[in-house]
Length: 95
Figure 1 (cartoon, rainbow, N blue to C red):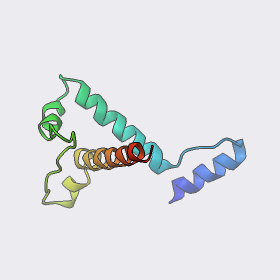
Figure 2 (cartoon, one colour):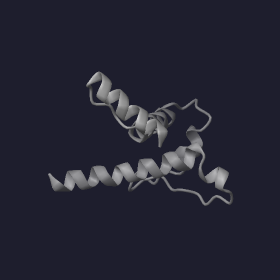
Figure 3 (tube, helix red, strand yellow):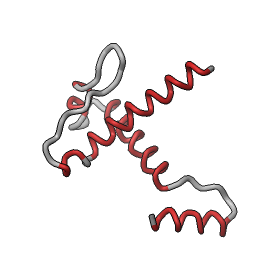
Figure 4 (cartoon, rainbow, N blue to C red):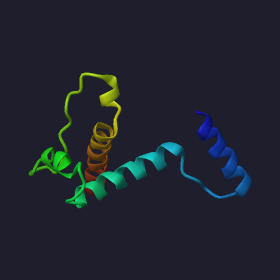
């Protein structure tokens, strides 16, 4: 990916460790999802909170018929949130 190459070049020029583009996108997506879940007035709040399971706290993903919908913000954010929850649980079990 060209952006990753640019980040590596910038890292070597300035001498500071920089996050990859993928990590930045994941962090910002999770932050946006959490801010939507905290904001009762946000238009997506009820849609996302209705998908939350009470016992596990995971968000259920919906089956989408088109690739365009599958790649939109909500399904990607739900998959990312669920995968980060699994990673956190694994880290807690290891401690």
